[in-house]
Image 1: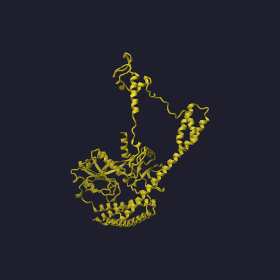
Image 2: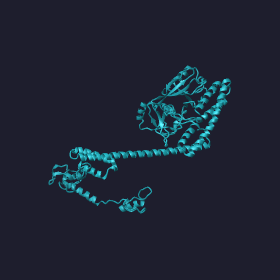
Image 3: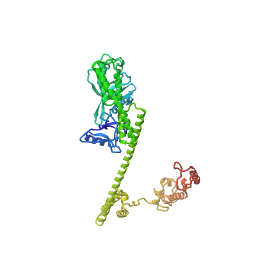
Image 4: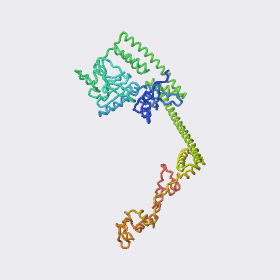
Length: 567
């Protein structure tokens, strides 16, 4: 039985489990400090598109080893077990490829669709399909899926680890390669052109273009110009090409079989065994090697069937015992090694295990929230106790310095005492509150500000105050009973003859008439009763209480009766 996967996680996604925004953690402690400051308000997740569990990650800083992401511990304190298989710096390359290709095509006014396909159940991230109006690309980042050279609309772009036969290079003239280089916390895409008897030439993605032939680099242009004829089809001769020798095909299949056994992929092993069975024309030493490899692989597959049965049996037992740690560990192994060709019983078991793990994670999240709430309450209690101690100290200081301190110094201490008492909350005793009130009175703190606005003048008040209550646009329309100034004219100084200097301030008689009218109108107005001023005929609620309606509003009959009362 394999133990827990202790490989360190170097990549994550930002913002949530379903995010497509990848980032890579710096490996050195000095770089991680700057990384943490830059992403102070961000969250990191073991993304679903990374093959992860979808839980939140934290960063681990070390000075004696590589820094990395890590899961939070489980509710039982044990490390969280995640079924994510790819964890290194290249584990998010498919997300970087999508982001870079989308930006590259957008600069060329081309819309594209992206899909992280999983043919034959291969792990996510092995293949990226890019489809657009003029064709498409299929990016193979590893050897999990063999490239198809004859499929229209899917020009292969191979990762550096994907092998290619010499005959393919000869027939097609060239093949495209892709690699990603680390740059800070990101990965930069480069496109290479490999041709027969030529070294692979690498270019930035911005140096490449989409043409009628497909993806084109500066090296492709040189290769095409140097040839007198062009390939028969858009991306190679494909169907008309000469098949590679049986010995070469056998060596490729042996290498694929070895790789599949090493990564414990029984599905790929079965597929390669079928390809070997269809292979003809192999003789001698190569045939003996194939037969030995097939025999070992078939024995390995039989052993994997037994291991698979034991694994699901152990998972069922762990579920029956409700052993959260064991269920998480076994479910991670099941998802990693037995995700294909499941029976109905196996699907039922894995679904029940996933539901149990989700339930345990929710309980753990609730436990963390309760712990955090208790921690915050304890911190608040500690702050209040410290503030209460400060209140006691300040009261003692004020009493000790009462005779010798200045008023300014006393007010400073009283203000500090007021703030400390506010922070202390219920920890301030009644006696202390009384002392604080005395000191606030002595320091003249907490009193409402003095009235600075001018009081409203009453009728009969001096003219200099009364005219400010009526705007000019109102009194200028009235005739002055004192100087006989007609409407539209200012008052004059000689009230007897109606002559003399013109005054901007009207006589009080001209203003007092308007004020008297306003006072009479205010006295005649009655406040109309609202709907809550009467008893509701529907629910019987007395005046002042709200109705018992479903939406919390007033009943219609109560509102209509209120309208009738106002008429």
